Length: 268
Image 1: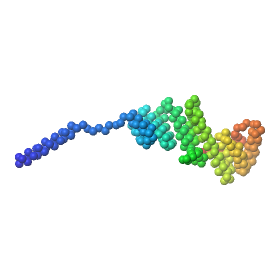
Image 2: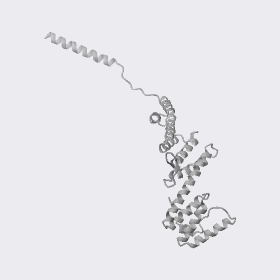
Image 3: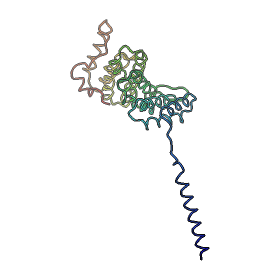
Image 4: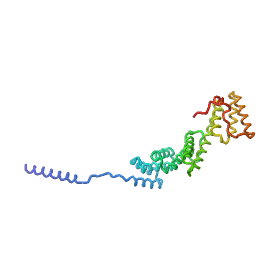
C-alpha cells in the first residue's frame, strides 16, 4: 500500500514539473512585417514583373494602414501595376482611391492624367491590332472628355495637358463617328425623323467633324423624306451661303421649329 502511494506521489511530482517547465517557456508571438518593408518588397516584385505578388504586398499595406500616407501610396502603386497588366478598370479604381485620400497632393495632376489614359485605353479593342470601336459602349470616351475639361480648368499649365488634349480629340472623333453610325442606322431603316435628330446633334456637338458636309447632306435628305421640305430648303440656303463665303460654322437648327421637328437634342 505504501509502495503504491509512493508511486502516485512520484507521478504527481513529475506532472507538476512538466507543467512548471511549460509555464516558463516564452509565449509564441506572431510578428507582423513592418508596413514600409512590405511596401519595398512589393516595389521589388513589381520591378521584377511579378505583378500578382506585388499587388498582394501593396494591398496588405493599404488594408493595414488606412488613412496614412503610406497606405494611400500603396493604392497608387496598385494602380500602376494594374496599368502594366492592362487591367484598366482596376487601375482606374485604385487611382480614384488614391485621390480620395490625397486631393491636394502634388501628384494629383499626374493621377488625373492617368485616369484619362485609362478611359482612352478602354476605348480600344483587339489584341494584335487595337482599334477604336465605334459600336461599343461610348462611356469611356465621354468620361475622357469630362476629365480633360476638369484638368484644363484646374491645371492649364500642366506638362500633361498636350497629351490630355490628344485623348480628348480622339474621344470626340469616336463619339462623332458613333452619332453618324446611329443616324445612318435610322436613315437606312427609313426612320428619317430619328435620323435627322442624330445628324443635327452631331453637327451641333462636333462642328469640326471632318465629314460634316456629308452629314449635312444626309440631314437635308432626312428632312425631305420626313415631309419637312421647309427645313430642308432653309438648310440648303444656309449651306449655299457658307459656300459663297459666309461663316463656316456648323449649322444650328434652322428655326425654332427644328428642335421640335428633329426631336431636340439626341438623348443618351
